[in-house]
Image (cartoon, rainbow over all chains, first blue to last red; front, top):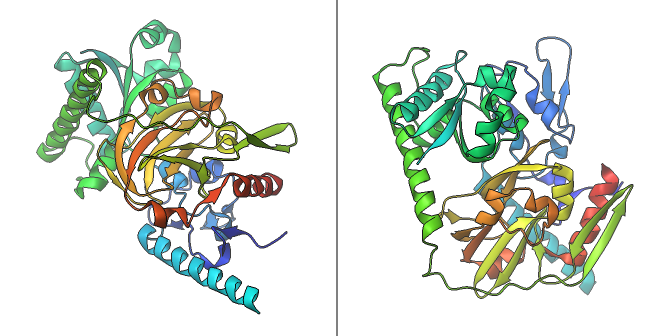
Length: 102
Length: 286
C-alpha cells in the first residue's frame, strides 16, 4: 500500500489524533465503537483503551470526542495544524517543481 | 409556539440535572410538552402520535447523548438539539459537582431555556418572511459524473463545477459565494442521515473549521469547511428533511457562504477527477 497522504502531505508528518485523559476516561468504549478507522485499541490491564494507530485518524475529524460523555478526548490545535499542513504542502510543491526541473 | 421537549434525566452528572431543569422550565412556561425519556425508552408507542405530529427539541447533558439517541431510535423529527456540556465549554463556566442545582446552575438552565425559546421564535418568523435582501446566485447543476465502483457500491463524483477537501466535503463556487455539502461516498458511508445541525447564520468560518454536523444512524460527521467565509444561508429543505442528502448528495447543499479567501482556499482542494481517484483509494483501503 502506498504511504497515505492528506492534501498531498504524508499523513505521518501531521500530528492529528485524539489524546485520552485517563483521569476522566471511564472506558465505556463508545469512541472505539464509533470510530471505523481502528484508531483505538482495547488492552488488558489498567489502560483498557489506547490510541494505537494515530495515523489512521482522519485529519480534522473530532467525531469520537462527540460521543464521549466524560469529555476525556482532546485534539491538537486546529489552526496550528492547518498552518503546518499549508507549510508542508508548499514544501512538497516546491520539491515536485525542483524534481521536474532536474 | 408549542413543541415537544426530550431531556436526559441527569442522575449521573449535574449537566443532566440542568437538561431536566430546562425541560421543566419550557413546560411550565407553556412552551413545550415534556416527553419522558424513561417512558419513551420503555414504551415508545406512548409517544408515537405526538412525535409524528410535532417537532422535538432534544436537550442532552453530555456527549453520551442519551436523549438524542432515544429520539433517533424513535425516528422523531428533531428541530433543535442542545447539549449542556457544549454550552458550558463555550462559556468557560464550570459547574459544582452536585446533582441538586445551586443558583448558578439554575441561572444557566434559565438561559438555555430562553435561548431555545428565542431560536424557535426566530425560526417561525424566518419561515414566514424569507430573507429578501440576499440576492440569488445561480449554481451549476452537475451534468457529468465519474462512477467509482467498489463491491456492491457505486460512488458518483461530478467531474466539473465541484471541488473537494480530503474530508469528503464538496464546495461549489459562483459569484463570490459557495455552497457546501457532503459527497456521495460519505453519505453512503454514513448510511441513513437523521439530523443536520447547521452553523449559525452570520458565523465567520475559516477553511477547515466545522461548518455543521450531519448525524446518521451510524455516526456523527463533522462537516469540515472546504472554504473560508461567512454563513449567509442555511438550506432549510435539507435541515427539515435530512434524508435528502442520501437521495441527492450533490444537490443537497447544507450552507451557503460569502467567500473571503477563495484563491487561497482553492490551493488545498482537489477537483472532481482527482477526488474520484481519492475515493477509489479510500474504498480499497476499507
